[in-house]
Image 1 (cartoon, rainbow, N blue to C red):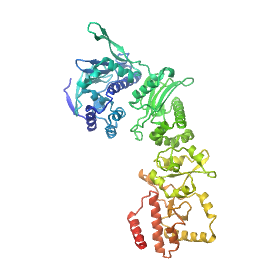
Image 2: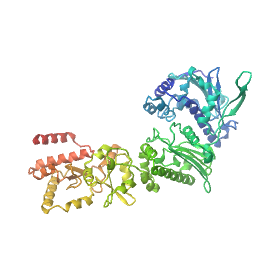
Image 3: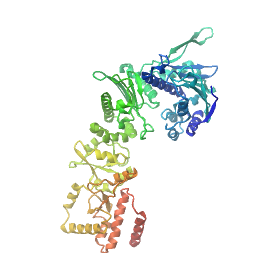
Image 4: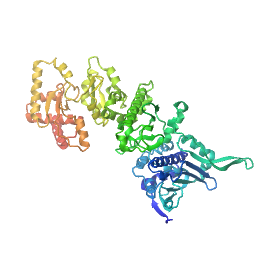
Length: 631
C-alpha cells in the first residue's frame, strides 16, 4: 500500500460541494438514483468492452449493483462489479470537472430549493449529490483487468480537499460508502431505500440487490437473512410491450436515463420487425440542455445491440438539428463490436435514423395541430432555433419542417413570441398578394422598428419578423412555401409596389424626381451603388437596400462577426419623395450642401438598419453642422 496523498478540489467543485453540504436541495433522495445510475453505466461499459476482451469479466458471469446499509455504523454502501476506474480516472472524474458545465450549473442557481434540485444531474454533478446526505464519502475502485494491488481509495468530507491512497481490491468495480448525517437517518431504513430504488431505478437493466430480511417475532423487528435479493425488475423498459407500461413507467425511465427532473413533453416507443429489426424509445424533453448550442455538445441517444450497451451520444442516429432528443435505440441488425467508424457508413443505421426522424417530425406535427397549443409553444420556445437548422441541413424533410417552424410577425406587434406558422400567414394573405414578405434584423426590436415596414403597415400586409441568428441562412435555403415565394422587404426588387405608385405621377413630377436622383447619385457616388425614389416609406426620409445579387447587409454583418472577410458592398439609397427633408433637397442649389444632406440621409438610414458607420465622428460632426444651420 502507498501512503495517503491529500489533494485540493478544483475551485468549481469546491463551490459545488459547499452548496450540497449546506442542503440547498429539498429532494435529498436523488443521491441514490444518481449513484445507482452511475453504477449502471459502469456495468454497461464493462459488458461492451468484454465483447472484445472476455478477460475483463475476471470470471464473474453476473453483473449487478448492491445496496447495503449499516444502522450502527450509520453508512450506506453502493457497489458494482463494473468497469471501475484507475487512479488517474478518479482524479479526472471526481477531483476536477473538466468541461462538465459545473460553472454553468452554478450560474443557473436561482436560490429556489425546489428548482435548483432539478439541476442536479444535468451538469455532470450527480456524484456530488452524495454530500447532501453524508458528511464523509469513501470510494474504493479498481479498473477491470488491472492487478488487485492497483485499487484506489478516495475519501472526502467535502470541505475543499480529498485524499488518495493505493489499496488492494479483490473485486473489480467501484464501492461507494456514505457516512450518513445525523439528521438523515431515514436513509438507514430498508423500506426507504427500497422505495427509492423501485421509484427511480426499477428499470435499470441490471439486478439491484439488497440483503433480504424477515420478521423476527421475538425481537419484534425485521432482521437480515444473510442472503441478497433483487429489488428491481431489471428488465430494459424499451423491450417491454407498450400495453404493459404506464405513463409513470415512461416518466421514471426518462428521469433515470437523462437525470432530468422535468417530465418529458412526449415519448415515442416503437418496435420494428421484418427486414430490419430494432426497438426505439425516444423522448422529446421539456427543457433545453445547457450545452444545446456548444460545439462539443452531447447527443442524447444510447445505442444498444441485442440489449448490450454500445455507446453514449450516438450522433450518427440523429441529425444535428434533433440533438436534443433523448432515448434508446436497440438494434438486432448490427454487430456487437460495432464502432463509430462503421456507424458512419452503415445502411442499417441510415434506415433507423430516417425512420426515427420521420416519427419525431410526425409527433411534433400532431403537437403543433392540437387544439391546446401550450405544449408546442413550450417546445418551440426551447428548441425552435435548432429546429430551424433542419431547414438548412435536411433537404429530404424540408417541407415537413417548414410546417413546424414558428415566427413573430406584424400580425401581433405587441408580442415577441414566435407563434405564427407559414400556413397561418398564407391563410391571411391579401387576395392579390403573391409573396410571403419578411425582414431579418439583429433583434426583434430592430425588425419591428425598421422603416422598411412603413408601406406594408399602411397597406395592411403582414410581414414576418426574423431576428434569430439562424434566420438569414434559413431564408437563403427556404425560397418558397407551397409555391409562395419568400421575399425580403429590404431587397431592391419590390417592383410590384413601385409600378402601382408611378401610375398616378405626372410627367413633370417624374422629371423632377429623376433630376434629384441624378444629383444625389453624383454627389455621393463613392458611397452608394445606386440612388432611387421609393414608395416603401411613409414616415422616414430614406432607407438603404441591398443591390440585386448582393449579400444582404445583415448577412454581411454576421459573416464579419464570425471573423470572415466580406468584400465591401455599396448599398442602394432609396429616398421618400413625399418627406419634407427630401423635398428640401429639390430646392438646394448649393451642390456642397446637397452632398452633406445626402450623406446625412444615407448614414441615418444605415444606422436604422443596424449598420456600423466607418466614421461615426464624421457623422456627428455633419449632423451638428446641419442642425446649427436649421436652428
